Image 1 (cartoon, rainbow, N blue to C red):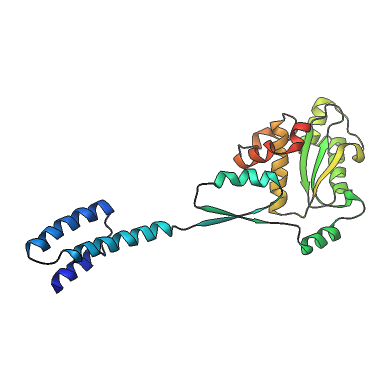
Image 2 (cartoon, rainbow, N blue to C red):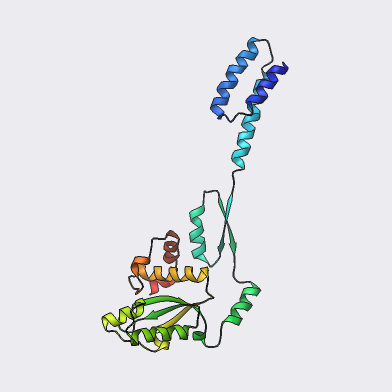
Length: 229
């Protein structure tokens, strides 16, 4: 009987599917029964294997994703992860530390800050989205010099020069969209706004650089400003 128990214990270590395990167990039960032994040992082995496999299924690795909660746009994006092994956790930027840092970063003159900006052509009202780690004022002057010296390096000057459109004062054509320091978040915010204006067929930026993005699509569809533009 000790040999039979050893054999069953060895079989329990093999990575058999439940179907194959049942077939093997049925065959072994017949052998055990034919030799006059109690078949309860075989049944216990099968039950133990089934319990272990169910436990593994229940303990599948769960992945966690963290989203900064900004409202219904965040809820719309996270719905895509329902019925998956991905759990969602939310964070917020409204911490005391971030609020104080934002207050220190923002100056009295909004054009003295850095971040994401939008330039609107005074003639056709098409928009150019850009980012700057210097001040908005400095960046506007760079665009102005590009137009003055007919430098077509950037899309905004290229558009105005090729179409004979004029440039207006900073207060009329530049809008500060986000005040933020240079980094990955600045790049993401810039891309979201370029994507939005591309969807509206209203951008001056290079359309060939805009790639399909499911998450951006969800954000744009749930952005109340999209329908009001």
